[in-house]
Length: 112
Length: 110
View 1 (cartoon, each protein chain N blue to C red):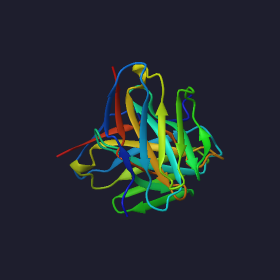
View 2: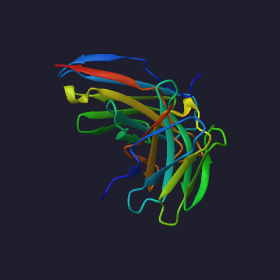
View 3: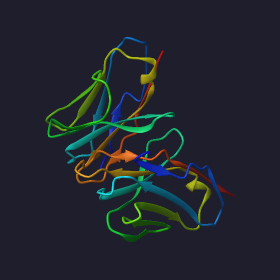
View 4: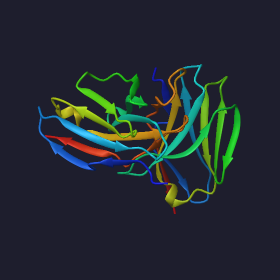
């Protein structure tokens, strides 16, 4: 079992729809969770960090964390073609701050 | 604040050579982490430096090494390059737990 798993994708949604990206992790002691966006040929760009159970909203993005289910998700409301990218879920293993374990990424395409 | 900078941005080497990549973190950030990204393995952690000390190391062979200077700038070195070392090498700096990535160095080994 991989330590961090994401929907394999690719995921396509129409413009204006909600895109839902999911991630599960295996180490129950993990405390810090991150979503990065990576455009083709570019480096990862931080979208959200979340540390506590529940929802965290930032503009059109909402991160959701459920530690009991070892599940993190990212919702993108009112999706735009510019949101088309690969979304990477990253987890800090316990006791290893700044040593991120990444999922394989979900490629999102927003269709105009 | 200026972001993380990495040099060079592109590099072509041949098998058996060695290479040194450089990373300058965001001003005030003392932690620098390095990652390798390949299509097959994704993003994998190489090592992390904080105040000139290596604090964590990923599962890579000893050919991969790094160091950090007193101004927090970091270098990573790969000796005896193999074809499989072709990848995007990313540096990330942080002041807390959140890491910010540089643009990366794309290494091609022929």
